[in-house]
Length: 159
Ligand code: FES
Ligand code: FES
Image (cartoon, helix red, strand yellow):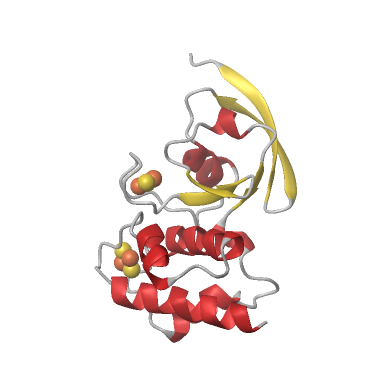
């Protein structure tokens, strides 16, 4: 039987306490223990970025993170982006600029982009491209994803 440890953390503003197998990934914890299935799993070995979430304000691959490593952390997942059914500006930009096709990679791109725009609101086009290149879209819808993130950046600069 695998060893378990108790962890407590804050996810999307709510405190959670669970006993988890020490080898459980954080992605599985979010999806299976907390029912937060917006975090997707693509490659499960750190390449695609579909599983990106924010851990203590930094984007992280939840497939490469163990649930026990998130003990005591403050976590945000894609479910936290909209408020009262209202899309956040980045989600709105994805919709407006057709930044999603099948949508599988979208949560990961949203969490990656929301984090970089928060940390570097003045990020230039080239650097933004560089950051976004860490995630994969199997539909190859990159142009519209990039367009959407740039539009959200420009919109957020006005406010
Ligand atoms: Fe985590 Fe692909 S599922 S990087
Ligand atoms: Fe299909 Fe990205 S929209 S994988």
